[in-house]
Length: 252
Image 1: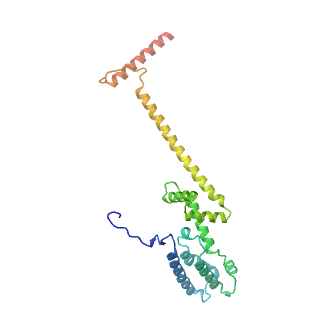
Image 2: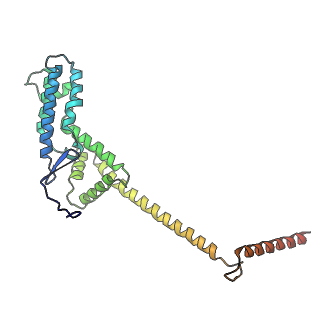
């Protein structure tokens, strides 16, 4: 119950355009993205590519701006696995652009147009997002979620996104970057804690000094509570002037 209303359990929920299935699966999202990408690819094919009216460079640019983004929506979150259906669409598009033989190897096709595999691009998007997260301020909600997920991973508990990101870094020979991020975070926390403790200590010292100044009674006699403070200050001023006059006479 929330606010007097019953909350229903569902097997799938859509948030920010991403369908999340029970068990943090993205099957429904991938199926929808595949349909969208194939529909766009056929639209581009009818824009002049089929008749050879568009140069290769323009066809590549159309793929990069109209079709490929449909396959990479939210990929920094869900794109850690190999997605063969999407790779097949990219290869089909490359063959359509080059008008080459179906027997031409996949590597040669992608190399001719200068494209990465979509898995490689998703890994790049993941690492760029990871770098953005670790540089966020500690007050950001995304950073707080990441820190908790990282703690779970270090404690041996399940943390899929952090585990997959760490695996990508290690596969690329960048495992030290993952370890350094953890060290930097702990160092930042220690610095913030030290700063907080220093501020608290400084604050206590300031309060103590103010208290001592208020209650210092070395040269101030005890007066009745109804004594006017201006009278006390005037008496102290006159006493100081008298002392100064005596000092001047002695010097003469």
